[in-house]
Image 1 (cartoon, rainbow, N blue to C red):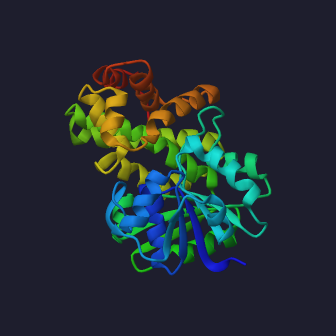
Image 2: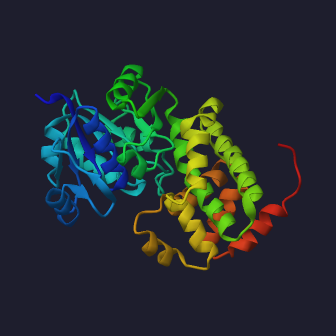
Image 3: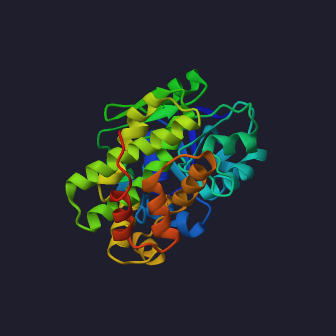
Length: 333
């Protein structure tokens, strides 16, 4: 039998490593899985993720591994922390390994590009609608969680007991987890904020000032809410940590990869050059296409997301994108 206080964290990037560290600090044994030996071997040797999360030593309670079967078999709870474009693949890999009592949870953000599905919908398709897991999301940079700085986030699940259990298991004197039942709202906030953050980076990169950035964040929140409510989310969710909180964080600090992508685009760099410079997946690039497609499908006006899409996929100059936003017909809030 698996230990009661044990986790498998699937995804050994910066956020997966940070969450593994937080779970270790609250008394859990953690298997931290990565799919490449070249990624995992240094973690074993250095007792630290020097590439993705330098300066945060791994305690003995975290066991890095490339053996997915071992990670799944040894743990009661599974936490998937991979980019949205590989979520389905990881779910398909672990499905035959799961036991009935195990819970699959995820900290993946973004729509699946080919289908437009949110992460919980991908989980339902692969594992079946009877599976009730939880999504973990909120305004948290991996570096600060890894350094044990004060942080808070949201855990959402239709299973209220599961959300409360996970919140209790993850929380300590510097980390606080709140619970919610609005999975859709939490996931929409986590997906669209990355697109708005690219716009915010572009805004600052072009030297448009703080007034412009705050206006963009505020109107960006309106777009997040517009899409979320159309998909059945609660408006109150977007005033919380996984909505406004995550949006403000991602738009306003250069730890955000999406914001840095916007800064790079404003400086005249191409997508690939910017991606190579950032050296990690920039979720907002794919999210821009998925959100644009969703807005068209649902008949929703999302002008900021639309302009980000055009900059990335139609080679629109960032300054022209902002001119388009400023030139829109006046309206009420």
